[in-house]
Length: 124
Image (tube, rainbow, N blue to C red; front, side):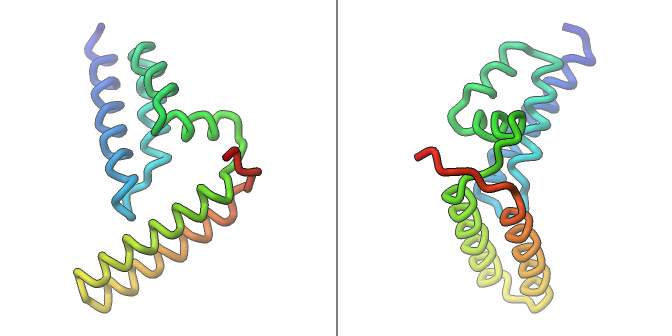
């Protein structure tokens, strides 16, 4: 494996790690980081690309993006609730007017974005 592929593979793991962290940290975007990781893996390692596509946590992000299926109502609602709960905890802990304003703007923008994504019928 040449140095370029090793660097891309390392970038893939960094993106995947940050994407994983983004599942619980409100301001860290999960989907773009998981998609970046998948792209890096598809270039650098077939083994890791197949693994991330089949992974129960990350696979649905990649599959839904590739097939442009949209998000289920359940997924949207869970993420909006988790987003606002995380923002509320952050606001409570930081207690600064500018933090309230900034996090409120982020919350409204992310909620709007999620609601604008195509909704598909729940698979559950």
